[in-house]
Amino acid sequence: MLKSLLDRLTQPAPQPLQDGDARLAVAAILVRLARADHDYDANEKRAIDRILAQRHSLSDADAAALRADAEALEATAPDTVRFTNAVKDAVPLEDRIAILEAAWSVVLTDGERASEEDALMRMIPRFLGISDLDSNLARQRAAKAL
Image (tube, rainbow, N blue to C red):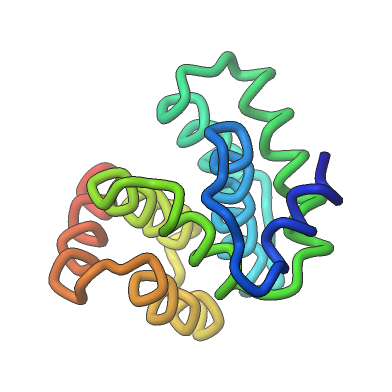
């Protein structure tokens, strides 16, 4: 399944993702953000599990399994641009803004904003087709929710 998704993501013109693959790609983006500062800890894993459970109405075990699949995908994936472009093509704008808010939640979970995380958070909104204003508003909502 992961190899098939990677193959589709790395095509010159990727096709829109189906729901399950879009979920996995979104989860992989969250994992990539959490790993960006080379300190992927239990708090970040719990935050990703919580986000996935809430967003997709999953049990705790199913959310953890999705995160584990996303960790494997993220570890072998070529680049963030292809992930975000695939998600952009597969997910409506309002859901992409919610994804960005979830991404900010992961970044802010450990109370520190590493330069690597900041760099990704400057790229991801642009590749998801989200304005700077909407990104800032998403960050503010994520910070309030913590």
